[in-house]
Image (cartoon, helix red, strand yellow):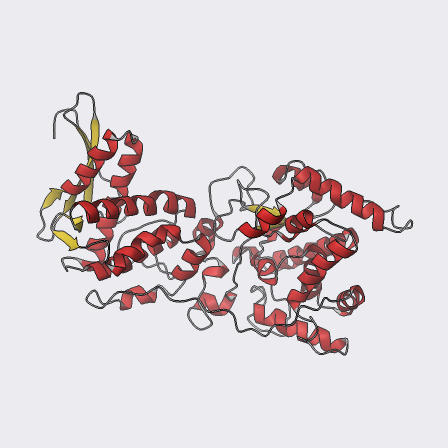
Length: 499
């Protein structure tokens, strides 16, 4: 190292097997990062292949900061390799598994749910944007470079994995960059115990095929307004009454409702803080948030902490979408797994989308029910355990008070609700998801909304849907809803607050 060079240990409170230094290149005033890692025999050597890549990137006008970040990622990757495999030599078939493990520990933290960290890495949870744009991009750049230039991929100086572009695991590794966040996270949601069971000498781990749900469905016949009104009126459990109201008159999927936190329902005046151009300050605000990456955690000035980070730091919990099936963990049994299909967000900075009510009277009743739930949560100190809004309130369920409502419980409540009305559930569109179909039908046939407005109301994020309908600005959305309410409200109702 030349005089004036700098060095730094980069760790996160855990074991570190590398040093990242900055050296001066031959060109005067030019700085280059140099990664020095431990070897299998206990020595320390520079990773020369990475140094050559760094020099090449800098010569191609890449920024020093970006190249430095590449070296940090590879140092972290080397730490994981040494922690997991030690001096064991692995093959190209193991490389894909190692990268998935790296992704798991970066996105979920290296601690298990019980707080132990068998790797000793001490890695904290990072946001998806940090991992996908940073770690995954740099790992792909390094893999492509080494595969094409050397025919091997060095993890530490003494371990070089023979590879070529036709190797299945290398193709899979490069294809990771094309995976959507939802698919990537769903894949990593399996129990952490699988990593402990991994044998370094076994064959490659294959990406599983995600099966479609086999839950009982219903045909697409639309529910009538009379049925929906009777259903809500006959429901005496305030939790399920609120869920039916929001599904029918706000349109979110059932899974989206069960992902909601208590902070996702606010007075209408809060709307101006989150959704500019939509000046309805009277109708209660209900929001759907990204369960992993949304930075709305209850602190208006904190726009950096993700929900996933907050859950772990505050409660040592993971998002419901990341839980395994029943009996796979204590959290899965206590909280219950809930999926998340994804929505188009009207606040991209905080990954939030608001509910567009088609019945403002029902919106205010919903808010009253939420207020009672907030009081119940406070009385039972639920906020000390988790942030999810809808919880078990039945005193007959010993040990269950305050636990999040599970999907199976809502489905059972739906069946009871249908039987109270003397109809058979799951026939002629009578399913919880049928309420979402009713919402769309009401917006289209009663309120007279155009297809692009309906697409916004339904929060469709499909590329094809967006090409077909476009996306409606908040100002236009507000004007369209106001016009529709003026048109459909009877004279006696127009004396009530419009919004």
